[in-house]
Image (cartoon, rainbow, N blue to C red; front, side):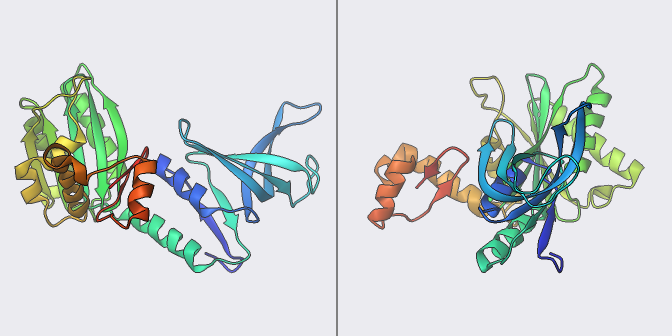
Length: 294
């Protein structure tokens, strides 16, 4: 935050866009670059300051459409005109608030903490021909990359390793879990350590991080393995017990167990959760992208 009370933000993940949606409010000012059709030209790039009147979140495309009136004037846009700016991944912009209250500042701190605080990474090599790289933190799980298979196994491993290095903060992550059926997990573990040593990648070098490999067993309807299985494997749970994500994992495991052993103690969906809240009957509340679980 600078002297003008503005914050510069660059969304890099879909969750970052959702974070911005919860941060901005009507009356705030957004400063962003956009394009506009003009006479005698195709499109020109403009820097606009817009006083926000409304925001629409589009989950499928991970974008925000911010509506409002322009505060600055240039040769193509006059002050006071209604305009819409689209906030999307890898597009930098600024937010200005007259007053940054305690709640907004706490949202900022939490957003930055979650972005940098994931200390558990998971790599799943799926049997249907792709790999997934996840980051797990106490309050959220992010799918950072999906890597398609390659006819050359070394090229496939190289692409996964590049995605891992790009998205995983090796100075923070304490444990890496690699799962697959067969020997792919062991082969990728050896490749990752050898490649890290060759490139002198910090923290992965000389296996300074705990790297856990496990055999995936239970396939879903799509023929692939779930992150849920990786995080609830008994051996994995024991080895990742010191990471921040464990509390969330244990809470979800308890929910899964209750579904089969004591269904009357579990409810999900907004309506049922609201009723449980009114009755002050909530012991643990889990929130996902699609629903609430108690």
